[in-house]
Amino acid sequence: MIERGIQLFFGGNAVVAVVVLALITIFLCREGFGFFGANLRNLRLYRTAGLEYVDIIRAEAEEHSALTRSLNLIRLREFNALLQQKHSTAETQAALGPFDQFASDFSDAGDGLNSLVSDLNDEAMGAKEAIAKRDEIFSEKERLARAGEAKAAVRMVVPRVDPAATIATLRASAPRFREVSSTLAAKVGALLNAAPRLTNPVAERQLQKWKAQVRDFVATMPVAYQRLESWDPSQPVPWYRGITAFLFGRDWITASFWQDWYGIRPLLVGSIMVSTVALVIAVPFGVAAAIYVSEIAGRNEKKLIKPYIEFIAAIPSVVLGFFGIAVVGEAIRTASHWHWLSWISFFPISERLNVFTAGALLALMAVPTIFTLSEDALRNVPRGFKEASYALGANRLQTIGRVLVPASLSGIISAILLGLGRVIGETMVVLLCAGNRIQIPDFSEGLGAFFQPVHTMTGIIAQEMGEVVRGSIHYRALFMVGLVLFALTLGINYLAQKIVQRYRMSIG
Image (cartoon, rainbow, N blue to C red; front, side, top):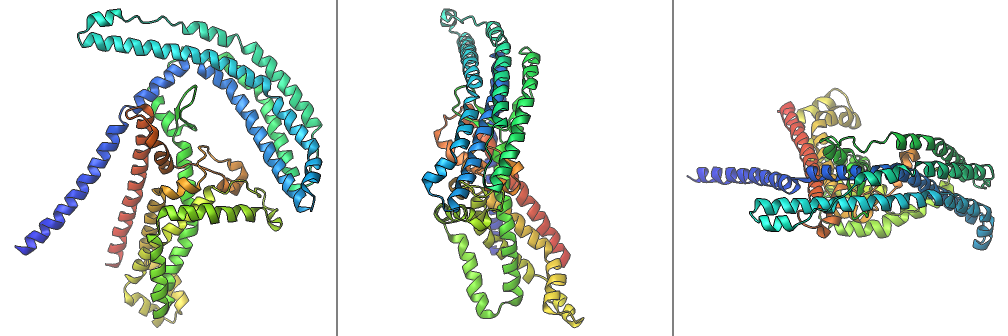
């Protein structure tokens, strides 16, 4: 009777766990339901109003703005180099005078392009708001008719909107864009020929690379004009665009005055980059510590090391986040300004909160998980394996590297995957330390991409969920992000369980 009761108790707990998992899945799907349809409607409205046309020109203006920001970063490197040469601040500012004038002239060269974008955007936004208002009134009129309130439905007047007139106005701006782009190209060409030289070799190399990027930018302007000519507002938006725009979109923009975009790609890239840094740091420390405690350390060392490593898991993540802001991030930024590290192309860095800062803190959180499970895997290797190795003349290091670690490799890999699941689902540390810039890092910087701010899937949910209207497209988009994160974490844990099963069979 007692055994039956125990069996029912543990069996009931397993059923409860399965039911809770199913309820979480149903809840995420229910709250996110309707997002793709609403996203598709927004995309179709965006095209109908002509905002896609404006975006072709806006992309050129944004590229010019990005080049201006890159020029400011080059100035920062030159400024720091002059200060390290014992120049005073006043002398440094005077030395940078010609470069500052060059940067200011380059920035001003894009004023005509920005003005054109502003004018066209106002025109297209007016059409979009009119179409949206018309559709809203039409939907309400249909709802009243279905509800049997025919008189109220008849009294509602659906305004007439002519998107074709707006499209014609937008298309008439093509000659103006060609004129503005030609003027911009001429100004930029003259500026490049008169660009000042910099004293810092690294800054000068960056400036030369920047010049090449500017020339490429000018060379691609005719392509933008061709895109304006070939743009067709009557081309239908396929049904799958509502899904692909979410899964592969490069922009997550909310509360925008022209259009909200819900592309998960920058958030996914940010989560993967932070998790990669965390694992690169945590795996060597966690596995090495497990090997040392299991096979090398004496009894007193084990009593000291093991509890302290496992105690890290008890530290609240918000405390680690504060430590990252006040200590780790500031230390990394300070180190990047050291003269003997100036040979690193992406140093100095201006942001203390970035991928590396968040990844270093997450590594600290992952070490206890990797350490504990790896040590268990090493201890579960049959003792006969070790004794046979020693009997054949192997020393301790050879036994660890060629017998114990390979025999426990499945368990160690499982520990690493569970550590990955731990860091990819962490919220507070990345929200505090990753910088929260919703943008895919510039991978042309090489390893410098890991010292740029990012946003993550967990961070965006925590940051925006408290501000959205329940049932809105933004609300449902956040739940779809949660569903992707849930599926990703579930897949990682499932893979870890499969590896554990294989490990148990191999030594059983």
